[in-house]
Image (cartoon, rainbow, N blue to C red):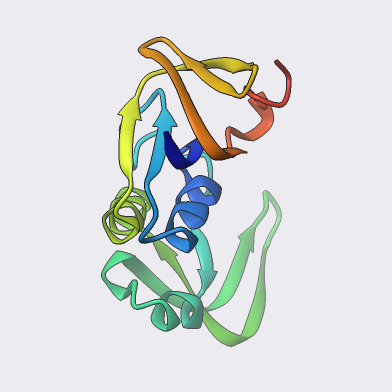
Length: 139
């Protein structure tokens, strides 16, 4: 029995796992931690600095430049923002969470059990962080 089972090990699932640090948490995802990037991975630099994730920063910018077929438009930013390395960011979150990772597909949720391709697991709390697939919510 886990304190929490989280299906989906990207931003949302890893953020929940970090909030539950110190508890017995199982992260279930069909992919290895830090793969399957679905975002451009940009944020205000201060966010990564606040959480001590500076090692994931790739580039710092003070403006956004939008290039079109006819022209380029600059949008200055009052705050520096950055792009970051998705893999490194996710791996750091995972390490800090102290959770277990089971690399397998979740098939659904039945009678309080999270059903996966590697067996069924029970948790006091279950979180569906699987994104638009909503693996548990749609079962």
